[in-house]
Length: 106
Image 1: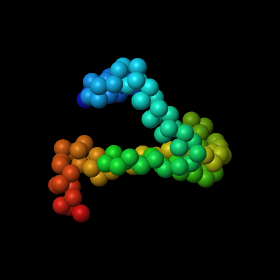
Image 2 (image 1 turned 135 degrees about the vertical axis):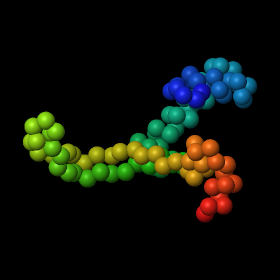
Image 3 (image 1 turned 60 degrees about the vertical axis):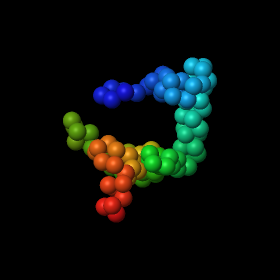
Image 4 (image 1 turned 120 degrees about the horizontal axis):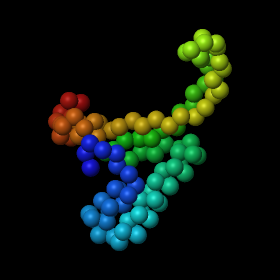
């Protein structure tokens, strides 16, 4: 799966291959997990997946921005944004390091 975008279908196929559920059950499992994550985030909850990372909803306050073409000031309304903070284990894996090596540094 490296070097390309991973889709829901790819995740379902991986569950099918590795866990042994039927393709229908695998797709339902992936949809259920993603739906639960979305529901929790929509309610403002933090979703923490051990050894992977955390999805956090943050509030951004009202601020003044500028139209880059005209320079006209525009008020940007307050809003909620979702951010992802990868775990140290995931960061190490992305950088080709083992989790044990990462633990030695801390």
